[in-house]
Length: 379
Image 1: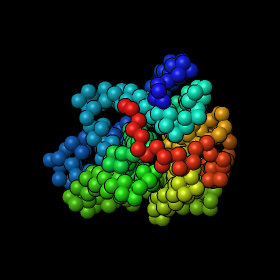
Image 2: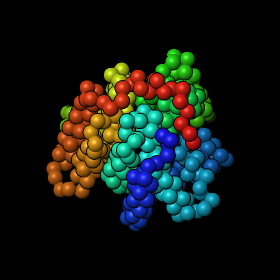
Image 3: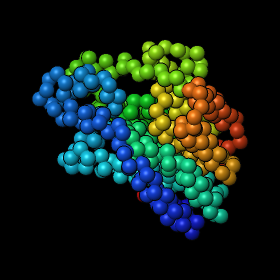
Image 4: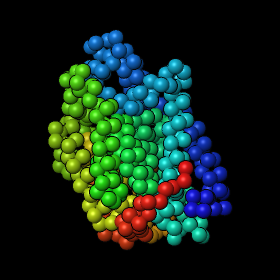
């Protein structure tokens, strides 16, 4: 059966589990670097008696919390275990989310790339991508423990599987949850186009809109100052590609966040139009990182998720070159002494090279997805 791992797959699963455990231990040492933001946000969200700083006033009072309500709620649910206990719970769940993402990519590949199933090439691609994917993912999930990015990327990959499985409502709900976890996930809404039929796309879009509104609208209605969170700025670091592009503002320019969303959606739409749908996530994430004034290393997790999708589902190459290049050039390089601007150039070079995917030979055309839109992947 298409969803059943081959012998190669079972061996790869054992190796991947060991590799994941090793990186969990490495990253757990002094891990949870950003967990205090989630503790602050979860405590504020739970304090509904505070009509100034708590409950639905959380974002108005603390715009520094650039974390979606779904992610804050997820952190809050674990808080009965204590701050340290909740951190450990989400480090474990975040690590597991990385494994789930790789498994879901395989399940999508089982339907859209049947040519890779019979000789175990699909499992080998997943295993090869996992070697460089997992260190970056574990830095995100365990080292800094950004639950919002973990959930946004997990929901996005689950939505992609739902789209290939022709489940419009589920696709929309999952994409909505991704935005509710982290607003930068909004351009991933373009994945709805993979549903094919106009009615299905509209159904998915309506579901997504309802889920996004249900999470965010109560905050804006309860306190109009919630809009403060939309205008929160961060330092434009000397390592950013934004500076290489000639933007030397000390902090986030007012046009920057909208430009990220518009560019991300535009390149994702272009990838869909060109029949390079497995590149949609990578191109959308690339638009974010190339225009972002921040240069946190955990941003690379989104890049390697998108790169793994292309390397496994879209590329004709046997090895995950795009995932490996992102790992080396955008992640490992951050620990290599070099001029600050060099990091910006590396980011710009990688993102610009992704434009090649719009014309690169693809292992699966868009029509292949549309032909299986009535297929249901087994749970």
